Image (cartoon, rainbow, N blue to C red):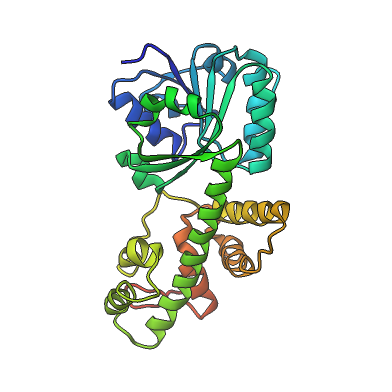
Length: 302
């Protein structure tokens, strides 16, 4: 087992689960989260600050909401740039703006600190089971050096290329995730109103050309009232789609398909589902259609 020390900043929905996987694999973790008690709940030794994690770790993992939080953690007065030392490796497992990640790569490299932008996919269930897919931008050598860190949390790790490549791949993937979820929600509500058996509809779609992640993995549960709580919220899904739109603008590629999911998740956020799992978009659309629900008696009085 490596003698290098692991630090983890951000121990919420995903970070806490990944930390528990690392601890279960026999790797002590020094963790920090502004919410009291999260480090202990994840099995980590609780640090008092970001500064303490950086000072006490050789590999620093980040799992934070977005670049507006990541940047102060790296650039702040007691952040990674101020406290870090040559040879450290920082792995950003957040969903972040690729342009920001590219800039952080350069700033940390000037201090001889490696930065890997490492988007993750697989949701809360994948984090719980250690079956995440991780897409990484940055140094191949740095990635190989921390393979032992990623092994307990990921079933698949792919080096995507230069700085920013990991987070670019992540926002592309998350956009398709948002499209399939919002579109499938509409289809299933229509199936409900048409009086179709929803399990049969999903069975047919899943052996036909409309099959997608939402039809395979989400709606077989949702139609029976299980929304798979604990995953990506509506607010974070909207953030991810906006990151996609911004990245495509930087690349000079039109983003004509973004309007639909932005409208759907924007509606859900406005109707009070913002902090609930993004799968609740089907209920928001159901509200707009007069209170339709896919499960139970099919209607609700909101």
